[in-house]
Figure (cartoon, helix red, strand yellow):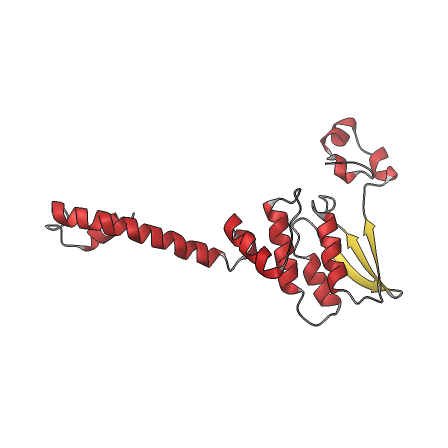
Amino acid sequence: MTKEYILAQLNKLHRTDPWVNELFTASGLTLDAVAGLILGLYNSSWFDLLNEQWVKFYETKMGITPTATQTLPDRRSAIQAKWKSGGKIDLALIQAVCDSWLNGEVNAAFTGGTIQLTFNSIYGVPSDLQTLLNAVDDVKPAHLALAYVLKYLLISSVQSMTLAEMDATPLNHFSGGES
């Protein structure tokens, strides 16, 4: 791609010159490699675009030990939560840590001296729930208890469903169901 772009910038008489073509082929390969490195560096600024190499780098620098069951998006979420956890400890910080997980839709609230996490997502709980709870436990004040509420389909909701609707509903939407 780089070679074609550079040749298009030249006079049309030089575009067919074999020496010029070979020169731009060699430099184009180098420029393509540099462009790939620049793109990787740019993507390292966005948590959802981190590749495996950058995830390992951030985990090492942040002291995060991934589990064998964590997927790449789960590891990205853990990095994002750790990154956000350095601010003033308040409910907004806890909410920001919870928002690091995809499909979590977690609402953090302070009720009765307890930090309460309510999982509101139609997708159920995040795939890596334990890591989310550990991240919140790391940033919350030690003297406050942590409670969480999982919302599942109610019996009244299930009774009004047809068999086809129940069959199309993932198991993790039911209490005790697995994905």
